[in-house]
Length: 120
Image (cartoon, rainbow, N blue to C red; front, side):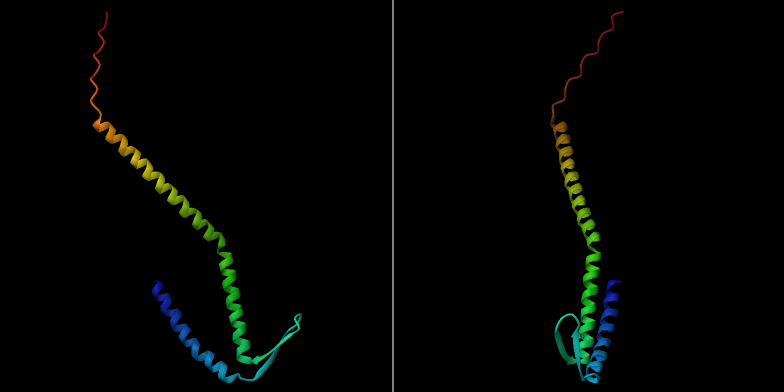
């Protein structure tokens, strides 16, 4: 199933390349970009401003998705740690049981105690 998603992503990505090239060729005029509170002005081709905005949006969305998954990653780490701890404890108990069974098998047999005679 994952391979199908990868193939679809590759197809969409490869289809986007000609669209980006067409955007760059068709929009070569220069634009002035001014960020209001900052006294910095950038003059760049319009396609660069558009693609820059898309890139910033992509990075911002990725950051927000990563931050929103922090709780799930923390829970997964905790669960892995607890599972590891349980496996270690089970192995320790298994070793202890094996040692007890070995000791029991190699221990000399104790003679049975004689039955008490009833005094009637």
